[in-house]
Image (cartoon, rainbow, N blue to C red; front, side):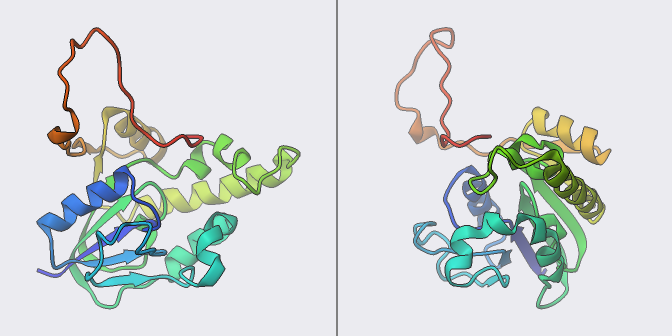
Length: 209
């Protein structure tokens, strides 16, 4: 069975990339499609795999890809598969489900619907987006992204949400049902046993969302 796995960006190593590694354990021969790839920032975890990247994966462009957010829907649609696949799996919080990679069946593991489209505060807090930027600029960008994201969601046969919270967003934004499959957990990380009522622990990067 020919499998393609689509992932938004491979220029960091966070939770989504750890989920991607688990998917690739299930489908080790899968082709990977991603808008851009940085071997060092992903610590070589994807080295040796067949990775196809987009026109964003060049020079300084890859370091400033968020500046191209209004163009990413078009870039994603122009990013075409090298062949037809039996199964396409997108691991995405944005654009990967909209890549032009053909498959008989498309499963999307959704970390979040496209934040810049549905929750405009994310556009306001981009590094290149000054606070003085008016609604006349931000809202048309968000509206265009929203239209594209909704259309891209229609390519998906089955949505898998990473939580009930994201399942609720999929239902609200895409009008689609989804199955909830939580990301895997590495039990070695949790070295100390504590009583559940003592405190809550949240581990994540200190970025806006």
